[in-house]
Each structure stands twice: as C-alpha cells, then as structure tokens.
Image (cartoon, rainbow over all chains, first blue to last red; front, side):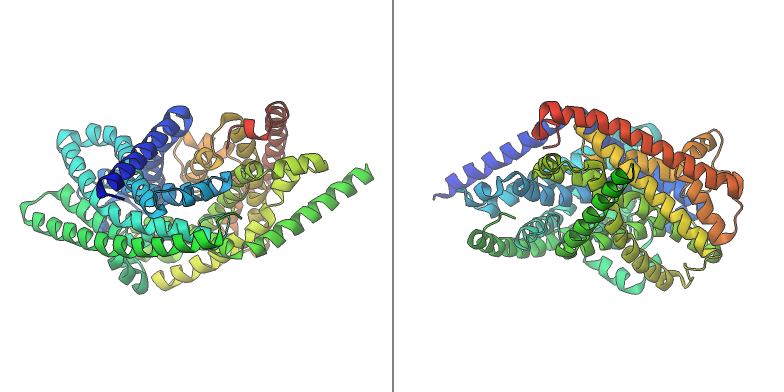
Length: 276
Length: 272
C-alpha cells in the first residue's frame, strides 16, 4: 500500500476517534459536567485533608511554590490528564471486547497498531483539553491573565509530556486482552505513575526505592516543569529546555518500545482470538 | 416467613460462593485492584503528610492511615458493584438472573464480601510503606473490637450506597464511578477524613447528616481515644439508623430502575 494511502487511513481513524469522543460528551451532558468538576474536587480534597492535619504554609514550604492553591489546581489537572490518557486508551479496548466488536477491529485492514496510535493521539489531546479547560476559570480569577498565559505554556509542555504515556497505555490495554481478564491488568500503572511523580507532595517524602523510580516517569518532569513555569524566572528557562529534551527522549524510548510490544501482542491476539 | 428467610440466606450463600470462585478465577485482576487501591491511598496519605510537620507524625499517621482504610472500604463497593453493573448488563447476566428468579440486589450486594480482600491487602501494603517512609507504626490501636465494628458499619453503608448509584446510574445513563463524586465529598467534608469537631460551621451539619461520619467517629475513638462528637452511644445509634435509611433508599431506587429494565429491556437502560 502506498504511503499516501496509509496516511489517509490514519487521518480517517483520527477523525473518527475525535468524532466519537465529541459525540460522547454531547450525548451525555451529566458525564461532561462531572468530568470538568473532577480536578476541582481533587484540589479541594487535598486542601481539606492537608489543612485538617497540618497547614498550607507547611505545604508551600515543602513544595517550594509561591502560590500553593494555583499549584494544586495545575497539579490536579496534570494528575487527571495522566489518568485520562491511560484510562481512555485501555478502557476503549476492553469496551470493544465487552460489546463484541473487538474481533472486527483487530481483523480490519489498518493494523491495530495504527488504530492504537491514532486513538492515543486523540485521547491525549482530549484529556489535556478537558482538564485545562476545567481549571482555566479558576486560574483566571485567582491569578489573572499572567497566570493564564503561564497555564497555556504548561498545556504545551503537557502535550509533550503525555506522549510517552500514550505508548505505555496502549501496551497496558492490549496486554489485558492477551491475559483474558475482564479489567485492565496493568491498571496499577496509573496511580503508580502519580504516586512516584510527586504531583501533590515532594519526592523526598517517599521511601528511597519509590524516589528512585520517580526518575523514570514523565509526569515527574512535567510537575517540576510546571513549578518552574509558575516561577518563570529567566535562569530557569534552561532547566525547562532540559525537561523538554527528557520528554523527547522518553517519547522515543517508550513509544518505540511500546510500538514493538503492541505489534507483537497484535500478532498474538490475531492467532489466539480475543473473545472471553 | 421462615421459608422465605431460609431461601434468602441460601441465595446469599450461593451467590457469595460464586463471587469468591470468580474472584479466584480473576485473581490477577484482584491483585491488580488491591495494588491500585493501595497506590491511591498512598497518594492521599503522602499529600496529607506534605501539610504536616514531621514532629506531628506519631499522632497523625495512625488516624490518617485508618481514615484511608475507611476510604478503601467506602470506595471498593463503588467499583465492585457500581461499575460492575455495566458488565452485569452487557454480558447478559441480568437476564439470566431475571429468568432464574434470583435477586439482582442480593447478587450485586454479595460482591462486597470478597471485595474486602482488596481492602485488607491494600491496607497491609499501605501500612508497610507508611512505616518505611515515616518510621511510625500506623497499627497502634486502643480498642480493636470497636475499630472492627466501625469498619463493618462503613462497609455495609458503602454497599448500600453502591447499590443506590448502580441503579441510579441505570436510570440517569451515567456510569456509577462518575456518580462517586458524592462519596468523595462525604469523605472530605462529611466527617470521615476529618473529625466532625474540626469541621467549620455550617459544614458540621453536613457531617452529622453524612452516614459515614458516625462509624468514622467511632474509628477515631478506637484508635486514639478522641471523644466522639455525639458521644459513644449516640454514634452507635446514629450508625444503625443511617444504615437502615440507606437500605430503604436502595429499595426505592431499585424499584425505579427495575421498572425501566422490565419495560425497556437490558440494552435500553442506558449503560451500554
């Protein structure tokens, strides 16, 4: 098949996946509203829990941020974006199996790998858009246009930071099919990434082994970059560039590695079948 | 009367056995679930500790730990029942139970029993990691029987709540975990994560009216001797009354969802 034809099929899948996601939101307004409320709920939850056992000043000092509330809002959006990217991807595969449409998707002309990559791109954009649209009003009200401008920079960085996660999510989804479980067998990946990335607390509070694991997780660098962008000092721009290079490197390692694993799992699934 | 009770108990025993058998078949899924539970609990515990000066850890860590165990008992049924109802409908189990004349409520409710294994495994993991991170033993408890009573009450209330949102989800066409929003609100401003005495007015009213706050007050009394807001007898009585109230709401919401199911069919109730 010529390269142009591959590109056309890929673009069609991206368009179809995007239409599906938008229709889902339109069809179910309660679901949409609740999705937009979740980051606020996380923010309030952490704030209430933390201040009832300690103080916001202690949190400010521990996290080394100027405005802990704005930071908590951005951190909640980062957390839910990571959760969204992995959950949407893995659940969509399981959903196909529950409905009985998975064998058709697996056996259709574009490879499942192409389907997963196209779906991952849409899901990543979608998760970022939902969470940052959700917190934008709060950022505007509390921090004004300057904070909103910084938020847009963080959104751009988040787009890059989430790319490696899409590869991890696709592998997790396909693996669930291979082991024939009803749920996502690598579902622990999501909270593990959040736990070791220190979204809501300094990494130093974790036991040593978890602190070491944090170095391998893209969300860790995203959180650190968000802190630096919030401070926005010229001396720190260089460090932001370093974080961007780390994302690029992780995207290559995780997505190329993930791509190879997906192709292998796809062949396995086609041989063995994908029904329960 | 005795025959009806005997049949109900027999059904519950058979259903519980079936859930345990299935849990064993889905053991990787279950272990995965316990790990997920433990990791989420740790995220909140470490977030709480980020606000706390280390010198307060010996006082804060045990209460924070058991608050999170209560959260696990509150939230596991939401997934085990509330989310699983989609699977129950999608693969046609609902129709099979209907044809066999078995109780949908009993079948879904008995899923809570094996799901406690998840909370137990995750509590052990969280306790160990918390000890490694802080050096404080989170299992220092003053009154173990009272602690167990508070946990059984929370699990029973959570089962009733999960049934309510499972059936409400069928009617509203919203997956149950999305309706879990109330559960999180209950946890943070409803006197579970934070003791009722420390909640600012007028949220104290919300906390007192939140069913979970009463066994949570008993939990804090059992762990640290902290006097309960309504007194010991008052909290025990309030726990029993709220449990009965939740059971009554289950009956009403189930009737509404069941009427929809009978008139629209399994695929028409909106979760597919």
